[in-house]
Image 1 (cartoon, rainbow, N blue to C red):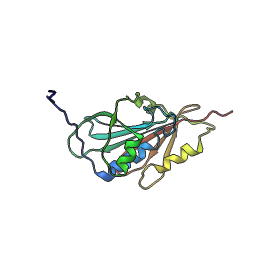
Image 2: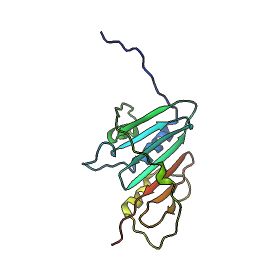
Image 3: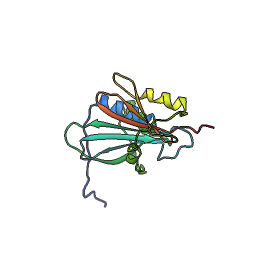
Length: 172
């Protein structure tokens, strides 16, 4: 007979409406294509000792990260929420299966130095997709890092710290 000797339950407490905003915003950059690989067709969640629940996703062209201040203590190891699970959570069903893929390191991509540029070409539908990220008053702030470098997008929200990247298109 198999017995369960020890189970570690990881818990993090946030308001449901804030979690909805966090997942809605992060899912904007999740790959939704039919041929998407599992690693990109997901939103990742983690809660470390920095006091935030962090959600992030990418489809190779867009990368978005949202940080939501947690209520109280708690930790959560990186977990993968597949696209169908994110839809279930946003539809108020919390029955999810966590994936096991790992998200590649990305923080260094936000550490570039801003530089003026003459021109840049951006995919208009990807640019417009940032309008779907839950935001508060004010518009988005765009920071340019130079030719053929991603554009940083800062999205104003009263509870979530959003930062995103949009890859430019080649000018032919």
